[in-house]
Image (cartoon, rainbow, N blue to C red):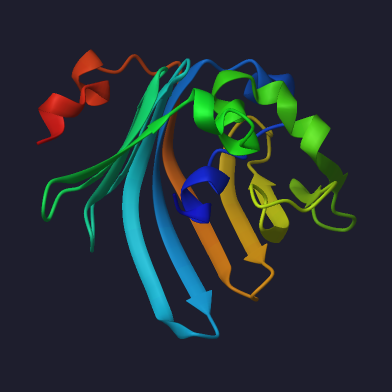
Length: 186
């Protein structure tokens, strides 16, 4: 699974409780990735979370979809309909997946700092580096009311920088259940 996929779920923690307690939402994103090893890549897509179910879909370039149904995680490549299936149990220790089921875990895995001199910005630094957290730092920007995420920046150990800009945030979104059914994606 890509680091960026899991990192997009890191929207929460020392932030206002509205994020910690949110059970469902939908948000659109634009993702830009810069790396010393390849040209800048820009993708667009959306993320829907409903309890432990989620759908992370890229609508540009590779047209990738990742669906979680509370038991399994399915990574689907729409170009060739190939599917990779992972069991929640086997990767339960991954802090990013645990955020889908229990977002309070974020404070266990990260030191969270409000960035001085920059309103509504937070920095998240991993307490320990593991294979499940192969990045250096996260930077999160919230709106003025601090009830919606606007931007998530990820800088990893290779100096790759991935920036998500979020829009059309809908808290309490009630998705159609077909979004989480893999058969409907083929």
